[in-house]
Length: 337
Picture 1 (cartoon, one colour):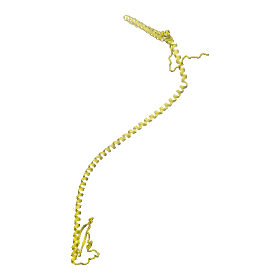
Picture 2 (tube, one colour; picture 1 turned 90 degrees about the vertical axis):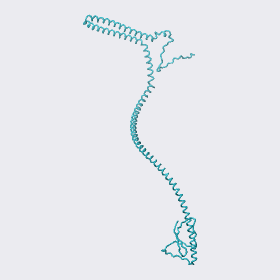
Picture 3 (cartoon, helix red, strand yellow; picture 1 turned 120 degrees about the vertical axis):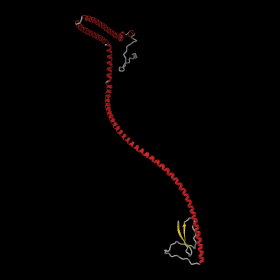
Picture 4 (tube, one colour; picture 1 turned 60 degrees about the horizontal axis):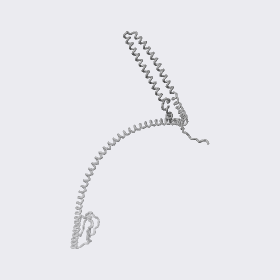
């Protein structure tokens, strides 16, 4: 703390303006004969006590002592001021160095922060552009996806409806098949065994009748073939007669040389027809003989192996899955005792 003080000493009322400073640990000692008063000025209304009157020699000694004390106080103040000034200068240099370091550090940090901020701003610009691009792309894809979703939903709804109809139709068909199955199961359990037995008996009868009436069928076939040949020959003869009448009429209207040539052609045609008829007869004969040979091969009466060795070549009917199995096993019976 700093302040201006007035120092009064002796009758001369000498005043000294001192510029004091509060220094920790150093306080000047006051003299019992010295009085310090704040300067109030001429307008002060307070009453001031006056000192007792002394001799001039004493006053001079007192003033000299007072001046010496004041000089010492001033020297102390000057030394303290110089010391404080030196401390302030050292502190100033220290603070200047620290401020320089801090300024350099701040400038470096500011540069780094500035570069980092610029980099972040560039990144932010790129990021904002990418975000806007992604947002627009996302909106476009969202619209397309929503459209595809609606189309797929409608398509799936139609397919589900069609599948439900198919499922309903299949359920109806399944119920019909179940009813048919129940009917067939009842038929299998009740009527099928009887029908199967009847079918087996009919198959046996068919087999027996086919072997029995096979010869008659062959005779009928031969008779029908003969009658067919007869009717064919009659039709050929009628056709030949018609042709002869037509040719005769045509020949009568021709020249003699042409008639002779036509007669030769007729003779040659008749010879060809005769040869063709002979060939047809031979072919029919060969066919009949082939049928007879095939019948003789099948007929057991003409089989030399079965005639000579009947015990070795027995003709047994073949078993089919729908035939009844009959076990003809000889059994041993006890004698009646």
